[in-house]
Length: 204
Image 1 (spheres, rainbow, N blue to C red):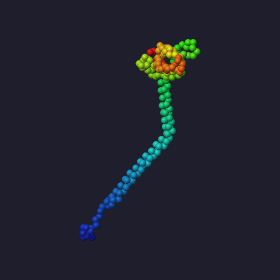
Image 2: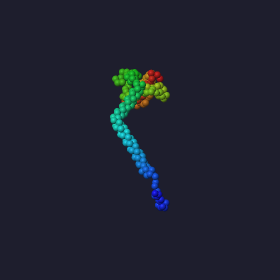
Image 3: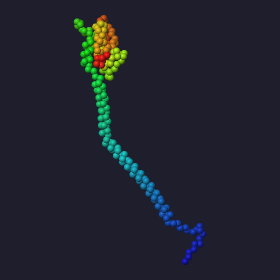
Image 4: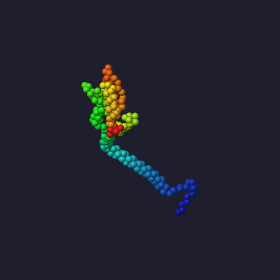
């Protein structure tokens, strides 16, 4: 038996291949699967990074006491270095003041027969000079390792002049005269101020 379709072409049923239906269903599923996979991998990456951050924060929290102790030790080390530096400076620029003062007292004018000293020290300020320095305008350019600022009273200008001459002639000292003025109503009593320099090895 032969079937003949006498309908017009516009009314004829067209049979499409079956694979288009498969593709119409499969493509959206594949796209949805890819998007789901990307989202899953992204979520996993974010979760892993968050775990790493939390792990680092936990490790940092555990290390905080040790870091604080290390900072404290570094601060102590710096303070010790500064103290050692100061001690080294003092050691290199040290002045044996006992010997300096003893040598200075030897330059005092003779007391004579007076009941009281002809000159006294009311105040004395000592300082070491490191590194040793020299100044053409001070102590005739000699290299100085120490200075003493002295003030007191003296019985008459002649005694003070003798003291200054003794210092000028001493190999270990130089002197800078500051001032002298009469003290009160006593015409023989003067106050004075001197700066005395100690030389390196007693050399001018």
